[in-house]
Length: 119
Image (cartoon, rainbow, N blue to C red; front, side, top):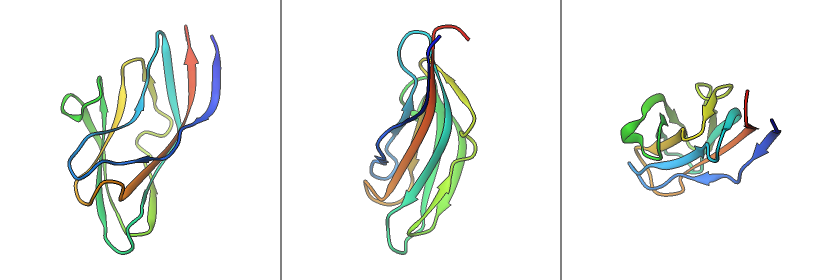
């Protein structure tokens, strides 16, 4: 089994209001990922935005379960504690949906540890 720690990905801008944005997709054969850091920043100056987070067996929120909802004030960030420390098997995804705002108003940053093969 190979382990890669503190794998970072570039910040992801969430899509326009009510659209699914994949924030993490566990891919590959026998791969698992454990989230080590996950924060979302509201780039607007003064508008509070609402974020909903889903764990899904594919890349849509429709087949997933909502695990978090946050109202994020302008120019501030929140840690998504419901996902930090959680493991995700191949095929599981974390989906973000902003219910207010325009594309790119919310930006997510996520780091994880990747495991390959057996446990």
